[in-house]
Length: 158
Image (cartoon, rainbow, N blue to C red; front, side):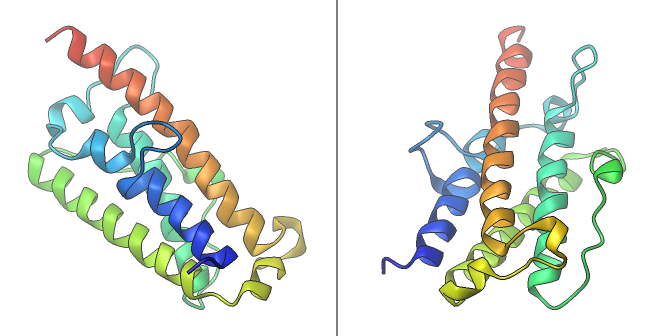
């Protein structure tokens, strides 16, 4: 299959679930098997790995809500506000939700009629579906780079 929506969905899966083409890694590679104490450890004023992952999930979940017929309820000012993760179990539950929502997002994009990519996303000020989906991919790579660096800093001292 070589449709635009399939290609975009594939790129989205790459950054979160299974790719190595752009960054030589992905969220799942970086976060699976990571102990919650490391994911939540603070370095100076940097965000934690957990907060960055939750931040990306926040946007995936918000856009997914629109895909499923809901409203756009996400706000930038709340995109870093999450209850603290306090156990390995909570961390694993979050990661499972992150992976599952990512796959649901990708499946929606994959099955979307190509012409919908150029439709307005919720309101003209937000641009098109294409712009929002591609921005989600770019935004994810941006924070993936931060996660990789923070993880290196945390693990070099162990």
